[in-house]
Image 1 (cartoon, one colour):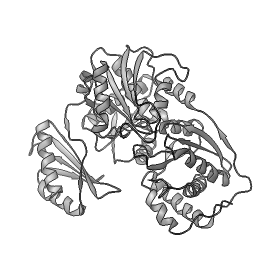
Image 2 (cartoon, rainbow, N blue to C red):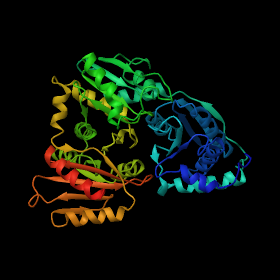
Image 3 (cartoon, one colour):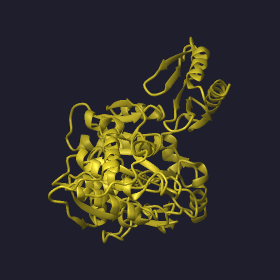
Image 4 (cartoon, rainbow, N blue to C red):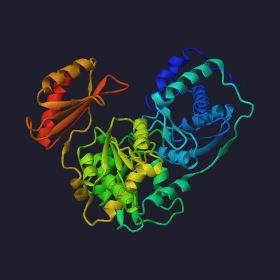
Length: 479
């Protein structure tokens, strides 16, 4: 038995780190090795892994190796054999979960600062786990193990190491063939995160794979969980500045920026201008629809997009003869919808891209490879390609501190009743009735799960329309 930790407030302490789709908290304060051991034991119970195998991987944060070891101890105590894959990206851990048909734990806090760490948990086959599909049960069972100790089983599991990087890179190369594209110069900003390991393996020759017609200019490839150059969060424009400058200085064809655990990828064109994740989603959707049709797939082809992506995404899917499936925002939720619908691809506004051929999980590297394949088969600049998939004006996400969300909603309802249609699938989506208020526009406001914030996203037929609606809604939210 692993002895109990300090039982005081165990459920309350776990509730602070167990989020809607993952586990995340301050190292040494909210997240400790005893807590990780208890979570591991509870995870083995929840996914019925006693007598089976659990995969454990981790990112480059200073605390990650010790946490991964603690997880292995807790899992082995409950009878699961542990395959430690060591340093890896989150999508590499999904590869291991899918290829080995085993549940997995990935230690990362993604783009959060160095003081944080966390765990992304998957059932076998890279299936997501949310509060509604097992995470709450893991939390509650772990609280009991913190108070009473972790009872060992008759046959504790073994712990063994396995490097899957070459297998992962080979698998991705098999999904997207880049060997025949025109030569491209690419600046890649790894943000001192795990792309510094995976990009040389997948797009370069570090995994012993054949050379691709790519010249890669590396930016911050050194693995460093203190993030000495900038936060590994490309969603914030300030963190793209170095990449944008480098693309122009090197005369590169494009730039790629990955977040800390390298499961999200952002793109800038040859002028250093950001390409919207919605444009990337539309481009990849077309490729995936065409691919499965060429392979002989008949019948209805579904492609998922969340409700904050640009209208160009469902329009592109429909023009290609496929069916757009609109969903709420959320990592595990979209993974579930991928499986329910059999969708070939899914795209989010946050640069998460999901692939049926990758067990329905998200993979920023695979999205980047699709973009390189499409762009590399053409002769024009990336700005020209992306412009075709950016016909409308997007505000990006605008956050406002709001103490009374229902009151803000009420003001919005009152102001737009009679000139718009309302939808409450996820937060509040308001779409203008073009016969009354032309040209077209829509916006969505959603409360944050963790902060007193309302998140606003606006799209309009043109920049002036978007700004007009954005400013009107912000005035109502902040009244």
